[in-house]
Image (tube, rainbow, N blue to C red; front, side, top):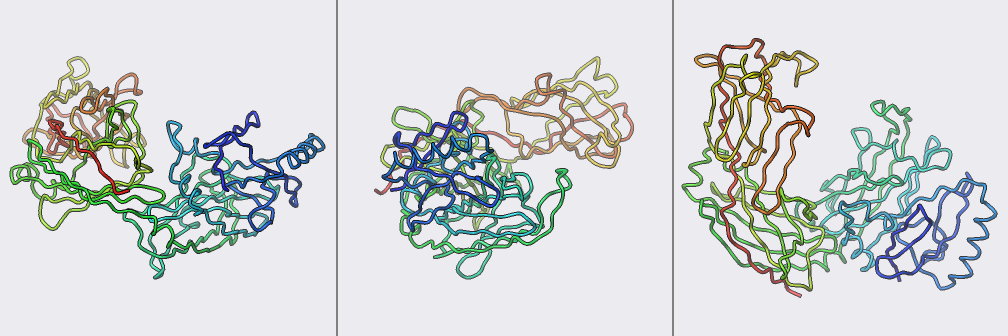
Length: 502
């Protein structure tokens, strides 16, 4: 029986997620000496590196043998490569375990492709991969001529790509490096829609190790590989539950729950939103398509399970992918969100906290740029509060491009969202300049519906800038105009139980 584990490598202790049993391990000798800690046998009886460990029955015999080897080799350098299972808690923020990988292991869906490709003294190894209609996870190791794992040499880019094809040969995804692990490459691809293919093929084209941008020497070679994964069992474990429930917010957005799709490695929520004619009038043309939803899940005690697009700190986030596509008429939007996990046996509710949408604005303030440093001017509209504090002319390389820029220095806070705001600087009776943003920003909130986005300030390393490319002199008068606002609506009071099919 497979048991997922996590290990504390600093003190050589190991504990399991499910219970406290030690894994059986022995040392495998390679060309460069004792280089990795491995399981003694897999199900075929052959010793090999594993990211998911197999428990044995001869624990004490093998433990004594292993201890003896360690004593004999106490002066040797041993490079232990932690397993994917052992590093799950470092892969995801806030000390959360990846339930999807645990479930994949429980169902026996961990694939062992036994990939080993050598060239120019470097070896690429892949011993574990997991795939379902939600995502693909691959643990890749790269060993150098000295037998050590090299975490810095492989960069996924134009020279190195790993693609995923369905059973018709169509490219359906591409793996990228999640980072966050020091002893193997944690490669992941997410599918925006549940994959329907009965099998997938993973094709790697690796031609370069090292990168000049990272100051590592470049080694050219061929480390190509491919292997297939059968998806039929994963598809059988997919459960689709239709959902019912709708609510219309006071300012004209209606949300309708559609379905919940539970897969081995994730849970996908689908819903639709639709805008009223009045709401569409505030977002003409294509503006209405720039939207964002805020919601969270909570249990019967009102405790947070997961949240989406919240400013609340701290919060729990297990969102893997999200997408929204316009429907067949203006104002209709199809949404999908895929989470690592949602409770299957315990009741919980969907709570809608708010939404934002791009709307025409026109809020403005006129000022004398040369006097801002001694006479700051406020911009206060619809809960947003900015203080304009200085205006300078900036030259390359201290610009966002190759041209001279006028820089409006400011700080403050935005109650509305900041993703799709559009700001311009206008010389009264003269030229208008579009602006780009430069500087640090963060958010703060204590609840689901309050909070602000903070722009600039001493704690963020200085003032925030609106940069106007081509504005090369300081005019006597300027007007700051917000032409589009990413308006936030939180006047919503709706929650609904989520009832899944067992």
